[in-house]
Image 1 (cartoon, rainbow, N blue to C red):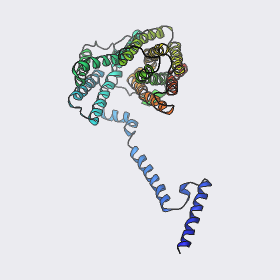
Image 2 (image 1 turned 180 degrees about the vertical axis):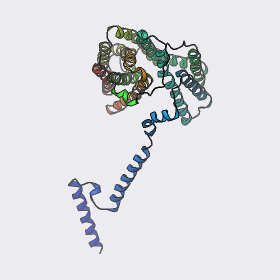
Image 3 (image 1 turned 30 degrees about the vertical axis):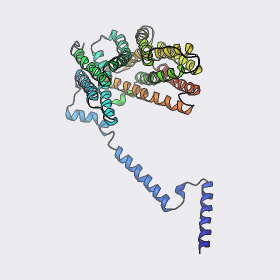
Image 4 (image 1 turned 45 degrees about the vertical axis):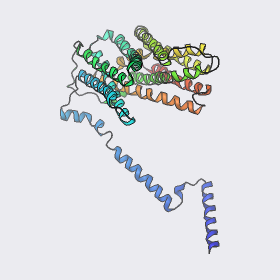
Amino acid sequence: MIARDGSRDVRRTVRAIQTHTDGASAFDEPSDARGGSAGATILLSFGLVANLATQMTFAATLYEIAAAWSLDRMDGRWLYVGSALLGAAASLAFAAFAHGFVLALTLRLLGGIGLAGVHMPGLNLLMDRVDRSHQGRAVGIYTSIYAAGSAVSFMIAGVVDAAFGWRASFIAAGMGPLLSIGACALLPRPLSQRKFNRPQPPYRALFRNRGLVAYVAAFAGNTWEVFAVRVWFVAYLAWLLRLPGNHITLPALGLVSGAASLAGVPVSMVMAEVAARHGRRRVVIGICFASVATCLALSATAGGSIGIVLPLLVLVQITSFADVGALAGGAVAAADPTQRGASLALYALAGFTTGFLGPVAVGTVLDWFGGAASASGWMAGFTLIALGSAAAALAVWWAPD
């Protein structure tokens, strides 16, 4: 009996191997286990679809709901002030209450929401108060100042932390959003009052605006590069300085990175002005080509002499940011005035999504090609970073004049 049972088991095993070799899938063989797997897959896939049924309901019926409830749009200053208060509260609460990962993550998330409610809504408020003939210049200045704000944040945190500890740095930083509320209160009146009593175009109309879509895609490519360069600047420079022959005295590497990023601010303002006067498309494409060339030069010289690589690192901080003002000006110019707020929201969403993904992608590629302590890893990383400006150039080339 044992022998017969054993031979049957062997035959079943041989048949299973033959079936697998012939390319049959696991679901093709009738068995309770495989039938259960198929059933579970189908049921849980259906469950996912059923749960997602609620996801886009509000977006799909928004205009009917707005009409039924007589909804109107709020004054952007209230959104700005509320978001600034949220950002300040998150920073102050971090100083007072953050003692673990979960609460720290929650408070930083709230701080990010506060910043999101200030950044592009602030640009929308600015456009309401600037004559159309000067909007390009105003956009260039406003969007370029982002890098200055990031650098000032680094400096405040560094100075206050050294003197009073890290919790005090969050208290000092929390004062910033409160100061912005005072600035908002001093704003002049809008040049014209926009009326929202007529039905607004559906959001899908944004994607029929070829110029806007092009600048949204270009900004996405731009932030891929900008954030990847800034996130990995210090790590690359620290590794480079440890290599034989590269030992030189530098200030704190965070300060080096901050100073390099600050250098991009006036360049971005100037390039926005040049773009407004001489054609946005060719100026942006020229900057993108310069940035791609710099990234590829960094790839080719990875692990090389500090005398060559450090100037390239500073240069890529400048070239990657130099077209920010011109791109934002292009998006504002391309946007339908009745949908400018939605257009800027789409612009910011696309850009900061890739701004998050870019550094993660570079870190992944570094791991694939030998890690952050290998020249091959950094060669691959800078090549990947270059794709951001390449995509931005292609998008702007596709945009209508």
